[in-house]
Length: 318
Image (tube, rainbow, N blue to C red; front, side, top):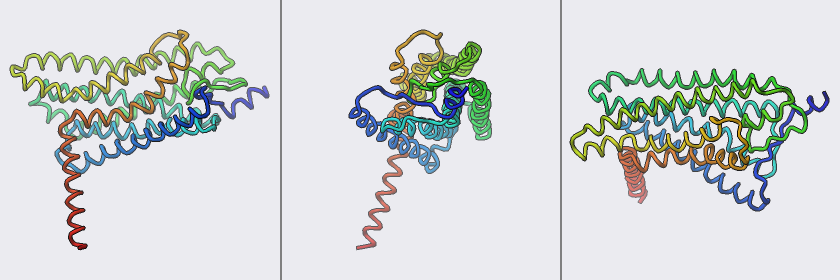
């Protein structure tokens, strides 16, 4: 009982079992990526608010995704950076709080990507009805639903896991409080919790994936029917960025969570975890900016305004 009681206060995060020099190198790299992620996603949000041409449902959803990515990576990156410099302990409450926000924000992202796919389907397949269906009120209601359903459903999942008994030594073989390694620390039979987690992952990930896949199948059929090559290219370019983001995110997460309990090297999950929580939030704004003409035009407009203001200020000063 003493071991169980003391173990419940702190968890030890193993992190990456590499040399100290390499950990410090990764600290610098991940810190740079984290700061770039915050900057890039804040820039997307500001662009959507500033440029009136971006006041459309598509870019409203994109700004929501950027806002979510800021908090999603912030739920893991600071703890990862602390782990790399030697602070590997996390409290019991801190562990489950991190777990709650990580999975809540991740689930919200899947829902948002499904809504964004449906938005592209309406824009391409029903362009005449699109303005009346995807108006501002509908977009707001859809995003509120995504956030609410995700945070409420994950709350009960984390509550179920937090009531387990954990025995010493409470060593989590990961760099954050992921569900599978935490379940491995329980003294109790976790078959029920594993089934609930698996069903939860299947429900959240696969249902949103099905909505996305069905939307893109219908989009492809509609694009094929467009007579002109230029029209087909334009239609495809409007959803190419979203499809790229979806492919990256679903590919990594399905491999980690939506599979039976097979013995995979934990290092593979750690690498995929870094890619999913640190790298992907930076890739999203980059992909949308590089492949989106409207966003690039908005950036050029803001840059030209700032340059003009700077030249005016310099001229007045002289």
